[in-house]
Each structure stands twice: as structure tokens, then as C-alpha cells.
Length: 578
Image (cartoon, rainbow, N blue to C red):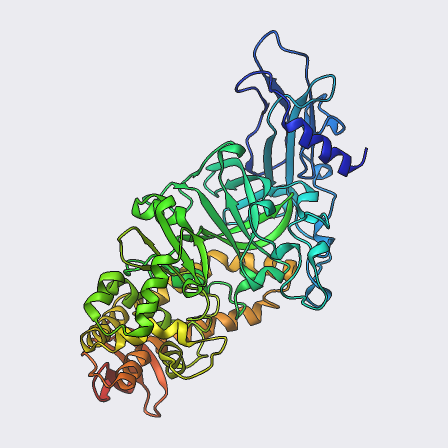
């Protein structure tokens, strides 16, 4: 029987009655990390007086049917059990974007269920993934996410999530294709597993969709994970982002390394952590390694999904009462745009009553949000990557997400300020009258403008001090560096370790210099006085930047010599290090 016939039969069997509550195929070993191979046993756990059942299993990630291999004796988990489908060879993008490696790393995935004599499935599907050091020749230091999905759900030309398919139009190669389709009809069932290096794990079925906007055309695609009762569990219950944080999530995102503009891969992670404790919503995130149907799919960042459930989970409001908008109200992701449109029309017509504006917008949140965007020189904002939300009478707030185009020196400091205050006719991919209207109304109030200057200096002095930002950069580099060569071989993004290290050095230079430079640029741009600060830049006698930070931190690390020190708001002063 063909795989298509298998899948159609499996869909029919999903509706068949189960024998008893809690009935399932039980494995002798849980999924996770193992040093060496072993034999896997399976047994059927069920109540007495039930029909005789036979266990069938697959090793390619597909849902088992009665036509798959029957379990008759313990299964030695050797190299013979590695998946043979080689789905990495299936073209998933237009020809000019396609990259295929010679081979990929694989892990063992076993899916099993019990069937009666007539071929009806009588138990849920049990799924475990096994990462065996002796087979792989290594053990990754990162947590591993394993997804098992029926191949047709990914690659069928009519319904597959990962392929151009019948929805692809050669005239519009970067906006069409199955992977650009959205909505519940483009959600597929997947078995999700998360294995942490410390041995802890969580496994459950969930919904799977392609995630993102234009970057869906990449080989390494973003993915959204949906917990639903129909799949078994209504939430992902596990402390993915560390103890002390939240442990229950309705939605998660797997953000691909390849969406990084520079190839460094780490910009969004770094910016989300730099945003910690600022007055706007941002996303928890961590690096993981992804396997799909047992095949290596590179480095991803598991993070919260910026949707109405995220707002409910963080703010305690009913998700059904949340108005969540994108692109400054042009797209409604949840609820309605009616209140925003009314507010925005008033901003256009007048908007000079600051008290009225402040009653409808959380000015502290939007202040920190815009300062964050300019400090990281986000080149994909303010037109794009904007989500604002409100619930009932609450003021509008913003969610910070997608900093893949940040932390480089393009645009420069003046350009990002021009983007944020744009008031000319026309528009660009960076800015527009619509996207800057709120900021222009806020800046018209002198008290807000002066408060933003003070807040900018405060953020640079604390959250963006190189003492902190440099430590965060080193933290994430240490976490991912050993995995980057495997990411390179799988997707050619980045193209080499040399280029990756160069991209990281650019970020390091940025963190040392640009936030401090922005303080002075911001003051000059708006005609403000620069608040004094202990932060300083250190130049050598030729005017070349040596370091930035607090003097007490810098002095022990500087060689003997003559330097010129400039505190924020002061003129350079000679400084001799003996």
C-alpha cells in the first residue's frame, strides 16, 4: 500500500473508538540522550477483557498504520534504525534559494500504536526520539527539539507546509507557495519533544504551522507550535526558559537561525535579553537544536509567541478581550481595530492634547519601546515588526519582537531618528507617515521629550552598559559556538566560521560604541541637554576608540599609556594609566 493510502487510512482510524482510557503503547526507555545503543522493548498497557491487539511502529517520523512493521521482539537501536527517507533532499524553496547538503546528521525516532485484527488503530500514537552519542559521534550541548510529522503534511504539493506546491506562482516567487499560506487550515499535527542536557524532558502532540513573513521562503523555515485539547494537552507545561520563569505556554515559536540579516544568528536573542526589565512586553527565548523526522534541521531559538495568549499569560487578561494589531492597525490578529482606528483618526486630525493621548497610550511603555528600537538601530522598523495591543479600557502597549535586522551600524544613528520622525510625503520600506505619527505627537510635548532624554541615558548607563551587554553577548556565543559548524553544513548560513566570527565582532563593536554615541546624537537631533553619566569612551592619543564603559571597570584592563576619556555630556580629558 502506498504512503498516501497509509495516510488516508490513518485519518480514518483517528475517528475509531479507543479500547479504554489511558490505553497506550509503553516503551522500555524514554526519549532523550544516551551514551550508547540499546534494545528497545514495547508493551501494550490495557485493561483486561479487550480485543487482541498488535503493535506496529515506524522509524521515519510518520504515523504508524497496520501496514507498518509489527513489533515482535526488542528492537536494537543501531544505525539500521536511523531514518532513511532523506527528506532534506526535497526542494522546499525556489531554485535560486535552494541549498542541499551532501548529508545530514540523524537521530532515531520511534512511533508506535496498537491495531486490532481489522486494522483499526485502538491506541494513541506513542513517540520517542533517541539521541545516541555513539551513533552521532557527538553530543550537542544545547537542548534538542524533535518534531515528528507525517511526510505528506510537509511535502504534499496540495497540502504540504514546506514546499512551493500548487500555490506557487513563478511570477511572484518570494510571496507565493504553500509555505506562505496561513490560518487553521494550514496547521498540521506533530509530535513535539524537548530534551534538555540535564536529562529533563517533555513530550506531547501539538499543531504545527509555518511562522514568519517574507522569510518563509528560506530553506530553514520558522515554525509555530500550538497546544490544543484536540491534540491531547491545552498547554506546553515545562520551564523552557529557566527555573523561576513561567512554566505554561499555549503557543511557542521556533525561530530559525537563518533569518539573521548578518549571519551572526544571535541578534534577536541578545536584544530580547537587553530588553529585560524595560517597560514593554518582550519575549523569552533560548537556543535549541531541531530535528524533523529524525533529520538535523539546525539551530533555532525557541521563544514565546507574541499573540493574544502571550498577553493573557503575562497580564492576566482574557485573550478573548484582547485587541491585538499589526502594522499600525492595518492587520487585526485578534479582536477588533475599532478603538485603535478611532484613536488614530484623532491623532491625525489633531492629537495635540497630550493628556488625552497619555490616557490612551502607556507612555512609559512606548517611550522604552522606541528607545530600544533606536538603541539597537533596528533596520526593519518602524514600518514592520510592530504589534500593539489593548484590553478593554487599558492603554495601548507594544510587544518587542524580531530584531534580526539590528545591531549593525546601518542605518546610522541619524538615519534611525529620521525613520522615527519621518514627516515627508511618500514612504519607504523603513518608514512612513502612518508609522511615525504617534512618535511625532509624543515628541511635540517638551516634557515627554526631555523625559525620554533622561530615560535614554539611564538605559544606556544600565541595561546597555558594555559591562552587561558584552557579558550577554559572550554568554550566547559560548552557548551556540560549538553548534555553528553543523548549522553551516546544513544550511550554508552562515557560510563559514570565519564569517560568523566576523559578524559577532561587528556586534561586539556595536555594543561598545553605538549606545553611547546615540545619547549624544539624540540630544543633538532634538536640541536637548545631555544628562551627565559615569559611562565614558576611552580614546588613544590618535583618537581611535579603545573601550567604552565605567572607568572603574576599564582601568585594570588598559595597557600603560596616555588616553583621552570622555564621559557622556563632557569634553574629552587626558587620562594617564601607569
